[in-house]
Structures are given as C-alpha cells and as structure tokens.
Image (spheres, rainbow, N blue to C red):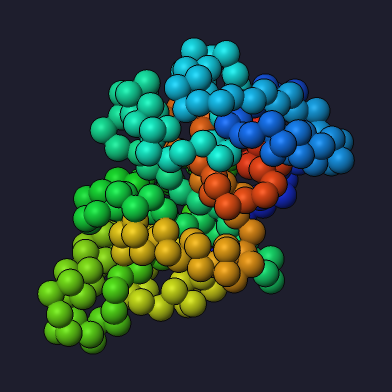
Length: 254
C-alpha cells in the first residue's frame, strides 16, 4: 500500500499566489468577508460575485472566469445547470478534508444522489484518481459498506452493500489501483487510505456532516471531477470560503 500525505497546503499556497479570476456565489456580506480573508493571507486572487447558478455556470463554461466556487448558491438548480452546460449525465464530486490531527483525506460520494451502485461508485473513483493524477497524487482507496463482512446475512441491504464493496475493490485492483474493502470500519480506512468511498451518497453526506460540522474536520471543498473546467462545490454551512477559493485557483494552475 502506498499512502500519500496529501499536501493540500502546497496546493492552497499555489492558488493564493496566482492571479486567477474566481467566480463565487455568495451574498454581498459573505463575499466581502471572503475577500478580506484572502487579503489577510496576501492572496493575489481576483474574486467576482454571482447571484444565480445560471450566471455562475455560464461564466465558467464561456471561460469568462478561470474557476468557480459554489458558495451559498442552492445545490439542485446549480447541479442541473452544470449538467446542462457541460453535457453531463451525472455530477461526480469528491471532498477534500483534514482531521483534527492533520491527516488530509478525500471523501466520496458526497452528493445524496451519487454512488447509488457498484458501477457508479467505480466510475466516480476512476474519475477522482484521474483528476488528481494531474497533480501527481497517487492515491490509495478505502471502500466502505454498511456492515462488517460477517454481517452479510443480517439483511438484504447490508448484504447488497457488502457485495458491492467487494465488487468495486475487485474491479479497481484489476486496473492496478491500490484498493481495500474496509466494510463498516471507517476509523481504520481513515488511518490507512487517501480516498474514503462511502457506501452511497446519502451515507457519504452524513459522514461529511458528522466529520465537518460536528467533529471539527476541515473541509476545503469538493471539486467536480468529471469536467475539465474547475468547479469546487462547498457546504452552505461554511462561514469562510477563502480555502475553497484558493483550492479552485490552485487546481486551475495544474
């Protein structure tokens, strides 16, 4: 197993030092506070505010901006606009997070309608690995399911989830990916793997909220990994989007 200490700080510094033009959906107050936070970090990023998902995505798809950050815009219309503008059948997002003890990792799927089956999860993992390979990150993968392996007979949903977890890992290993099935043992996967794959998007969203909003893990943003353009999704519960803006700018430079 190759375990990479993901250097998110280097990526954020790269973004901060860029002169990228980043679009963000935010209220005037939050926009100004994010600009002030970027200025306090001596960032040279130029930030522009958008009021609607349509305007933000149009600016991104027409190359009027270098990258985009969702900010506080509503999720459903924004994702619909992304699908339409970039001709996508589905949106694939992978969140970048850091534990309180400094361990950086990725979590996917995090959208409630993502990763519904083995095929969707495998496709999402492939897209994630390809996306971050541009940075030179060679990532290990830990796949979760809804029970321990010996819980397989404790219900159809549990059995299906465990079977899917094994199928995903087998498919990835055939392709040379360093992957392991951790069943329900999230704590072990977090210690040993770079990319944590939730059983489905609903579970992933709950894990994200528990780790970030309750447990205090940092959440830098969730890039959409199946488009060439740089779009970083964010939780509307955040009070400071400067890290997501720097992430978007750093990814644009790759």
